[in-house]
Every structure is written in structure tokens, then in C-alpha cells.
Image (tube, rainbow, N blue to C red):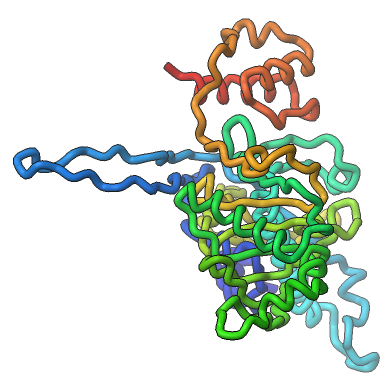
Length: 427
């Protein structure tokens, strides 16, 4: 059995790659940092025009708009699987009943299978982090101490990787029920969404939708007839199945804006054993490839009475417990997916409440807006004097910080509020 971590890391790199549509297309892998924290660098879209300048001036300074760099503590993903003496004594899956293989001969094979299973489980978590970011603007990470707590969803430490200030402004609302819209209205809504992004300096190229949305389009006779116009290049319906629950539906040309259309219906088994969708039903998202990236932080653990640190995307190890007569195959990963532009995509859901008017539908308020006028701020002492979680959350919402809940400890709530207040309302 192989125990050397460096050898195991190289082995993992040679394993058959797993297709991750969302992560690979929109948040491909980036740097790995030799640190507990990862650096994320984002920048707003920019549509400023260069000024004319009289020759003797030499030039006019244009301010760099919206750049920010943040050091964030990377989440800790660490599943493990045991190998017991009883497991090694049993015939392996697909093994002949009269193979006469010894437990020692089965050990390497089972170790490899466990590593591959753990690797795939971590990759599903990576994919889920990316889809959560697109649909909510944040990734809520609940860190558990035991498998029992994870199944029950209790006793966790919650951390949030958030890419908006006071409100998630990348959510578009329709003014009419999408299912009852005419084909022309559906196409116009997609174009309106693209215009919202265009005003932000973002060029969307992909429409990603769930199966129920795709069915509304692909079973709409008028929508399909849109592609049969002679002498007009309106796109091509050419459905092709891609790996991992993804279908390419063809291209759509809307008033000169060309989109690639994808149906994404991949599911995963959650910690509670339920089968769930990566994207909530009814989702329509306008994005573009490489709109973000995924960076990683180091993994550190004790081995041979010393701390060892590895800056890798996946870090496997095998640990022997002679007292319990068991081997454990472990896998570690510390990913941080993030968008390069906080304003760089738009998402809608056909089951959301309808907008009252088109202005509300656009929902195009800048995500880096200035602090609201008239906000009454409390000092740190006044904030810590609030002894009920509900009072701290109510104050947070009064200054524009949403998304906190009572699962956080008081100290965590204080820290979230103080960090947000300092960053948002600094002099």
C-alpha cells in the first residue's frame, strides 16, 4: 500500500478527469497559494471612453474603476473512507469467486477506489459551490465536526463567501409569467437581460437553463419557427448531449446578440441522502466562459510527528490506526471559486414573484453602490451591547447587511457586522 503523500498527489493527478460543466467552463482552476488564505482579485466592467486632450497637456488621468483584492480564508473539505480487515477479506466487486486473492492483494485496489470516490465527491462540492455562487451571489459553507452532525445539519460553524455588498443585484425578474409568454416575448426577455449586462460592460455569450425552462422553449412551435426564417440568420437548433447532465441546444441570434444555449440538469446526493439539483428548477442564467476562476489554499497536517504543508488542489493521505485495526483514506481540498466581475452575470427564475414594472425587472442597480444616506451607525461597544441574536441581525439589516441568521454564534454575528460596517462606511 502506498503511504507517501507526494506519491499519492501525483497519482491523483493521473486519474481520469471528471467533467464539471459549471466549474470548468465558468470557474476554471487558477493558482494554488502556500497560505491558509487565498487571494481573490476582482474588477468591475468598464465602458469609459478615452478623452480628447490638447497636445501640450500630455494626457489626462483616468481612474481605475472597481478593482479590489481580498484575502479570504479557504474552506476545508476533508472526506475520508475506512478500509477494514473485514472488507479486505471479502471478494471485491467483479472479482471471481475462485480468484484466491489475499487481503493484501486487494488493499491497493480498494485504496485506489476510495481515493477516486473521494475525489469525485470533492469535485461535486466544487461544482455546487459554483452553481450556488451564480444563483445567490454567495457560497454558504457549513463546517461539521462529525458525519452524524453533517447528516442532521446541526452543530456547524458557518462561513460565507459573498460577492455582493448589501443586496444581490444580479437577479432579474420577469414582468409576466414565463410559461404564458409568446415566443416573441420570451426572446425579448432574453434580450432585455443581455442589455442589462451590456450596460455594465459585460458581453454574455451563454444561456444556461434547467430542463423545465428548456422544455418551455423547445416545445413552443412559434419559438422553433423562429429558426425557419428564410435568408435570416436567427440561429440553429442542434441539440447535442454533453457529459454530466448537460445538453447543448444550439445557438440563438437575438437582434445581433449570439448566444449558445445549454440545458443543465445534473443532480447530486446531499449529505442528508436526498437527491438534489445543482441548479434550482426554473433557472435561466446569462454568463460567459471564464467569467471567474477557482484558486486554492494550502493543506497542512501532522505526519511522522511533524507538520507537513502541501500547496495542491487535492491532497490525499492514508493513515493507519493499529488500535482500531483500520486504515483511513483521506482527501483534502481548499477551493475558493470567485467571479472576476461582481456584476458579470444575470440569473432569473421563472417561478419567482413577478416584477411590478420593467425598472424593477432590470434590477440593474450597481452592486458596488455607495452607502445609503441617513444610516445610523453604532459603535463597536454599542453593537456588542446587543445580547440577542435577533437584535444583532436586525441592526445588520438596517445598515444594509442581509443574509445573517441565528445559526451563527453571537461572536460570529458581531464579527460579520463589524467587518461589513468598517468596509462599507469607512471615512
